[in-house]
Length: 593
Image 1: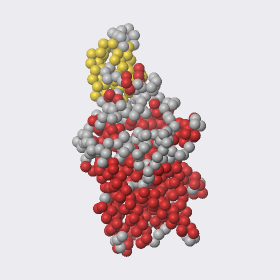
Image 2: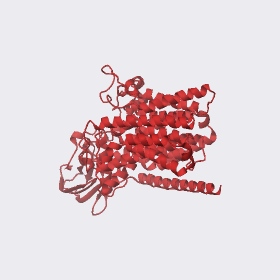
Image 3: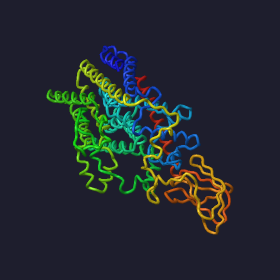
């Protein structure tokens, strides 16, 4: 912590003329400061081990199962095999995992799963700092403001809570892309001359959030929609609407490979996630006022769930102080009739304060839940009101950046140094308290972690009623008249040799959960055999009277899923080519100019 704070202080107090005049030094200094923030934010995880968080085992199993699927020759890995006693689980359909192919590839190279997770965490943390810095620069605020905002956001207490206590890989990955989505919306409404157009930045930011965490994507879309309404005069201009429509089309095409399977299953299948019920009121899961402010608090029985108590559900002292200073500077600027940037700063601060209010257990979530219908389903699916803390932290960091932009360079550097040092100190204290509670854990294989072998249950099939995980099969079962001679299972591929000696159709039921896409084919002739959803939602195969032979059951993606994947790859290549051409054109214009 001392080395980080010293580096920040020396950098922020350097001769501004020297930094401005030496472009290479300026970029190097900023990169070093962002790297220092990233190293501090995930310092405990750089040893090759991990500290236990509530969702850690879930994500280690996701990484391990992707690696296992790739090793079996499946890509993408839609149904992960080593869940639920080997019955398979469609987490790859409902939960974006494209970024997890990086740690999964490391697993295939022999890297232990905990080390692969640590490398992924560091990469995401460094990207978070860089993305926040870039986003603030795209808002046309000074470098020092951007650097301070990036440090405050990366070291915010709630983001560190996501990394440590919760091990919420999906959410902290989504938070890395959130600044890009926010800056992208603004630059879509108000284009600049940057190499990366605003609409493309918006597409990339939203795509990163979607592919990381579906609930965070829903919150992000809600926040951006509200921002667009606040900026209605700019939003509903004809040129802006054209750019927004183009961004929406590019987003859907780029993410078709994930969206088509997700929506196909969600709207045409029955799963626990889309069945009536299964949601509960959430107000007791909200953060207490004392938690939000980072101070001690006491509540009466029943006002807050035990799960929430003790969690760092706060932006942290540095971010709160930065936002308060920004509000004061903005009010001073307005009183001096220097409104440039002050109104935006106050607006961002007010939006951040609203995010804090939505995160609390004082907001009337239960009253809205009691309205029933869509409101009940939507609010219940949120689970925890403090998910709004993610957008709130970003808004407060942007407000702090806007407030710093109102100062002269020397004063801006001094205040930024104070805020960054405070952020470093509070982050170091939070991480030290976290690591003091337990020893680090280390696993070679993701399935060694003992807490999540049966999944979270959201994506269990419910075609024949809810799946009972206590009655899952581990071997094949068959009807009278079936003589089973051989049964082999490798991942999600089963080979069966059987004979139906009866004079009626008879079935064989396999230890695999029913997800539409399983097919059965006779090994000798290649003829398709009928498959069905059997008891407790297991995969079953019908055998005709007199059938004798071997057949293979495996999961095969529908053709329209494959077509959507090809579309996503084509759009990804096209966007990359367009971006490269735009960068090259800008570089040539700069040389000619």
